[in-house]
Amino acid sequence: MTNAAILPSEHRASTYRLVRTTRLAGDLATVFAFFKDPRNLETITPPWLGFRITSTSDDVMRSGTRIRYRLRLHGIPMSWESRITEFDENSHFADEQITGPYALWYHRHSFRTVDGGVEMTDDVEYRLPFGPLGRLVHWLVVRHQLRTIFDYRTKIIAEQFAATRSNA
Picture 1 (cartoon, rainbow, N blue to C red):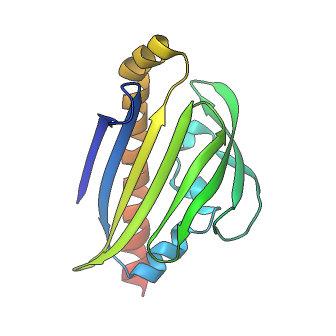
Picture 2 (picture 1 turned 30 degrees about the horizontal axis):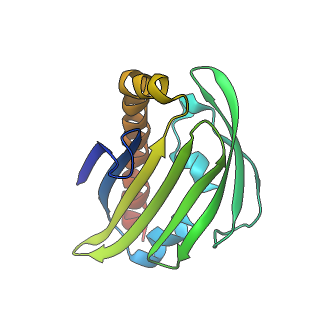
């Protein structure tokens, strides 16, 4: 089961939120372990983004971990660096963009045990640069693009944990 929404944030009219909740087969420790391995970002990112990790300060995420990567948005190559600003084992972690295409990007991943598996919630608060132009680009392109990216992530993650559960 998946729920998704992109809403204006209550903080500012030009700040948006994408909230997606997904139920996954598996136990909390296994699901969380998958997400705290930075290398799995490449697995769950759509191939059309050309996403590639260039460096990570830690092999396993923890508070303060920095991850640098390259990707392509509409064919334009760009660098992005994130820092893990919150980390609570088997509960949640958050990554914040240090450098990249957004004026603000704060992505909190929360996990909790539910009947039949784990409920994972992605809560992304983001803002584009360039004021009114950024708002127009959000409405025309970015909101659809983010939904497509998170649809892909949801599909790959669900497949990953269905396979993990059937092989266990």
